[in-house]
Length: 144
Image (cartoon, rainbow, N blue to C red):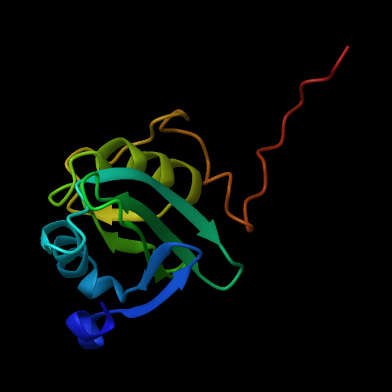
């Protein structure tokens, strides 16, 4: 796969999974390749996970080829000050709600998403609770 992707992605493996580290400006191109290439044909979008490493935010997408049995992890990064990556909804429609969850919890903004809004928390909720920098809102409520 590394020879087919060239400079578009850094390729490694984790157990039996192909891992692609992709610059965000190449994300849609690489995802489309993984979906369409006859050797992978990753037609099943499984999940998107957000990760806050403390120095960067990562969007991690897991896809699988139902016929080829190939599993691929696609990782891309952004910063807390510029938390933007392209949406993959145009590649896999199943990305829709998963990207909304990652946005809600980590604040990664998926540019071009058709309906990027919170999916669990109220729109007025301050911040994104799974970021390392998150401080919970102060409450005057007392347990009893």
